[in-house]
Image (cartoon, rainbow, N blue to C red; front, side, top):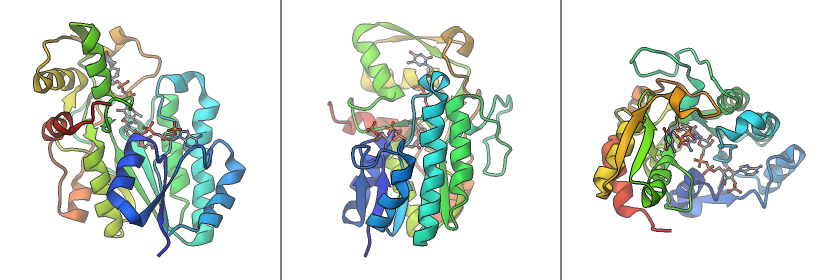
Length: 282
Ligand SMILES: NC(=O)C1=CN([C@@H]2O[C@H](COP(=O)(O)OP(=O)(O)OC[C@H]3O[C@@H](n4cnc5c(N)ncnc54)[C@H](OP(=O)(O)O)[C@@H]3O)[C@@H](O)[C@H]2O)C=CC1
Ligand SMILES: Cc1cn([C@H]2C[C@H](O)[C@@H](COP(=O)(O)OP(=O)(O)O[C@H]3O[C@@H](C)C(=O)[C@@H](O)[C@H]3O)O2)c(=O)[nH]c1=O
């Protein structure tokens, strides 16, 4: 049986998926296939001839992307186009991981479904939407939108690890209270993706932990569970002043995932508590 090829093998989600897929999968790193080198993608995939490609590689530096549009689109759109072409030649499915950031500054509070209109605000977000469109050119494709990933310990850059690191040196932090979403544990999201591919799911699927929160409440919950005495001051997105715009409400409706797998993901609080209990220190 040919292996499932997982790109972004050293990333947060890719490394977790590889751990869960075990001997069924083969990971590929940037050193083995630099996606910026678009001409190398087809030949590499044809040589490896996987049974499926799961693309967990991406340009994920949301603020940096605002000043580095070309690289961001090369990795998040054009490399996916090359993967979709190669998958069609090999007649194998492509699984593309996408983001809640394809949604806009919608002011309501109704979780976003797969059929809701998208309007990505920043460069990273726009590139991820183009990546979805590129992946949809694969004859067999699964596009999984998720949100606010964390996992894997201090070696990864994510909101939970940033908060823990900052709390080592500050007793007071300022965190935005006007962006609502569902930060999600890579371990749960990877398990969800395995469930979906094992059920031959196709099309677009939203997949996050359940419930919703703001980054401010999420930060307070991190410190409460971790037993750290940190004061978290609520601020606005405007006050924080990040380079990239972000959606004010990007909670994903995961009903389709539940219908496909009959297994909803645990709540964001349960997931966070498990992560903080089991995270490697390094
Ligand atoms: N992080 C998040 O909060 C969210 C992420 N997503 C999406 O989920 C997916 C996985 O994200 P996550 O695991 O968090 O991301 P990470 O940033 O942890 O991992 C991304 C991986 O992509 C690899 N990569 C970047 N550029 C290249 C390149 N030129 N050639 C080959 N590989 C490259 C990186 O390689 P290297 O290790 O060498 O840097 C890294 O292993 C992505 O599609 C992302 O857009 C969706 C929603 C939320
Ligand atoms: C570190 C920090 C961040 N923030 C804000 C900035 C931002 O609006 C929000 C989240 O911060 P981050 O920079 O960790 O999040 P960001 O990199 O925007 O996270 C995203 O990653 C990409 C790849 C995705 O696809 C998204 O789903 C998403 O969750 O918190 C504060 O308010 N205070 C702080 O001290």
